[in-house]
Image (cartoon, rainbow, N blue to C red):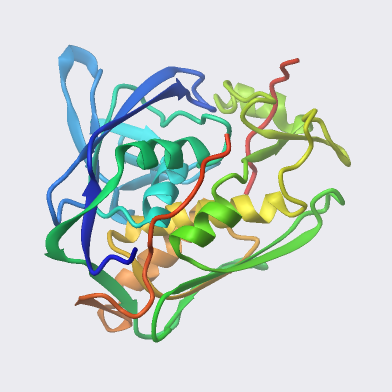
Length: 314
C-alpha cells in the first residue's frame, strides 16, 4: 500500500509507561488529526490545569543533551520525543495530535516497537490532501570536531547513512545504510534499543538524567560486556538505534524529506543542527506536493534483575 495523500490514524491509541530520564509515569494518547496539522503535542497536567500545544518542529527544540526536547521551560516541554517521532515518520503518518500528561515520552523497552504496535492497532488512513515533501536542493553540512551531519540532494526517496565510532570494543565502528520506507523501518530499525554505560551513571544521576533507566529499557554496557540477560537484538544494534534516533529527529523537518542524510559520530544535537542549516538557506530546499516514486508504506509486525545506568552519551 502506497500513499499519495496525507495520512492520519484511523482511531486513537493509548501508550503508558515511565520516562527514562525523569522516571515519571506518563500516559499519552495518539489522536487522529486533520490534513496539514502535522505532528503536534498537547501537553496536559500543567500547574493550574493549563494545557499547551507544542509543534513537533526543529524550531521548537530547546535541548538536545541525551534526548531531544521540544517546547520552552517557561511554558511547557516534552522530552525524549525521538522514538515516537521515528515510529510515526517511519510508518508514514503525517498528522497526529499527541496528548501527553507528563514531561517526557515513555521509554517503553528503549526502542520504537511499542509505538509501532500502537499505530498498527489504531490503523492508518489517507486524507484528501496531497502529501507535502521537503526536497533537498543542495548540500548542507554541520561539523563539530571530527563529527559531522549533512543533507544532500536525491531524485527520490530518503536514504540514511549513519556511522558511529566508540572506543569501547563492544561497539567499535559501525555503519548503517537504509532507504527509508515502512518495511525497512520495521525490519531494521524499530526494535533497536537505546544504550548506555554503567560508569557514567552517577554523573548522570546528579545531573537529573537516566533516573528511570534499567535493563528493561536500555542496553547496559560495563566495559566490554553487555549486561542484559538476552544480549543484543542485532549485532549492530547500537548504530541501528542511532539511525532510529536520526529518523525521529529529522521528522522535526515537519514533512517527509527527499534527499540523503549522512552522519559520523553525530547525535541529537547534530541531527537538529543540520535541519537548522537546511532551513536557514531558502535556496537549499523546496516544498513540493505530490508523491514521488518512492514513499513510506505501512506493513508489518510487532515484536514484542534490575540495574540503573546511564543513557546514551551521543
